[in-house]
Amino acid sequence: MTGTVPRFGAVTRAVHWSVAVLMITCIVTAAILYNGSIALAVGHRHLVETVHVYAGFALPAPILLGAFSAAYRQDMRRLNRFLPRDWRWLFSRKRRDGSIKVGKFNAGQKLNGALSGGAIAALLGTGIIMYFPGLTRLSWRTGATFVHDWFALAVGLLVVGHIFYAVNDSEAQRGMLSGRVSESWARADHGAWADELLGPARDGKPEASNDAGVTPT
Amino acid sequence: MNEAGRDPELDGRPVGRRTVLGLIALAGAGVVGGKAVQDGLAKVLGPIELRDPTGLISLLPWGDSFRFYSVTGAVPTMNAETYRLTVGGLVRRTASYTLADLRAMPQISLVRDFHCITGWQVSQVHWSGVQLSTLLDLAGPTAAATAVRFRSFDGTYTESLTLEQARLDDVIVALTMLGGPVTHEHGGPVRMYVAPMYGYKSTKWLSAIELTAAVETGYWEHRGYPVDGFIDPSRGKGA
Image (cartoon, rainbow over all chains, first blue to last red; front, side):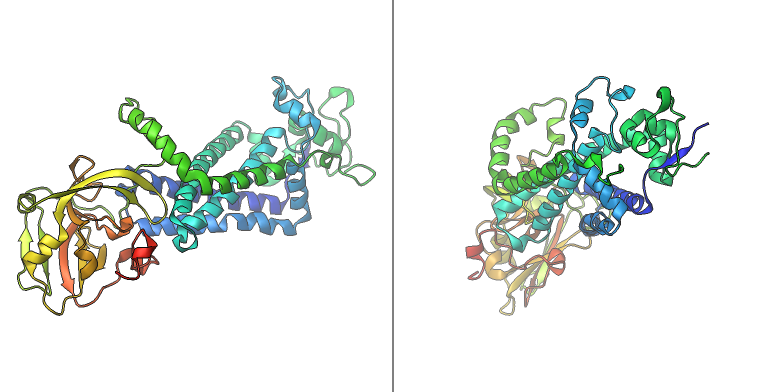
């Protein structure tokens, strides 16, 4: 029997799911706006465009509002910082066997967060240039469209990859849904974080526990 | 956190922040230089794309390709039998033309870059059709007519030009585009092509041309686009 440990607070989860809904809205409407066959089948371009643009404008809001929560700020700080072990993990073939103990986030999650954040900023900026044509000259709008298209494609791939890893890890999903994960999962996938919460594992046993917010399941 | 109250996970380098700032800088460079990159790519990839049996190249956003806008639900398909273009409003002689009537009129050809106001563009597009001024001369605008309004058989879209703009040499009722009849997706069988202006001024699925006493704001103009759609801003005010 293994207990659970708290992984994500309510604010972090609310930000994640708000961004998820807005991002999926942007992706679905983007597909309609971009693909000619879908665009003509759906039509109603102004409505689709309005939904896309406002979902896009709203996208950074939950990310910024989350900063009112200390737990969320700590998650963001940890996503930001790369330790030497993160690089080792990223370039190791054995990254999934737990031998390189990573913290609360592994390097892939950190990169996903940074790439998503940067891409959201780039898409927002270029989107504003495209939506308000009076702001800039035509050649910049052409450049903005070019950038927006490629960043959108890249973000689409990031989201697909993110969902792929999530679908294959039900405990990670549980962490983002309920906020808690099993100790054994924490030990196996985020060893350094588990050590921090639970103390070092005894004899490599995942059942090791202490008093750090652990509840039995 | 450990006993010292310090979070050891925060000792690393701020790679996340650098990545975010790097992407923002890349995007900024792309806004300024993206047009040049896109023009270069189009030159290299255009010929390859035409012969690409997989069609994969055209799925990627190289630029230089049309995006298909439709502001309503399904647009009816018109052919040589069903299509009619009416010319009316403040004119001495109203008319209704079939596709064959329009094809029998003098045609002109244009090769121009197509520009959407949002920034996407397609270079060197081939067009041909009837100069709008030909149809205006046949209709004979009355003294009260100062503007021309275009309607679409999508049932919703409208656009307008001043009579002076409508008489420009490179404003045509387009019958061919990209080397063939204007396809349904591109607004065929007949659409406007107002060469000196952004794409939204070129009504697709053209069904009617009406002479009016004043310029009436069109579909996208109600939604924020300028009534004056000249691509070259220096042409805007005097026209």
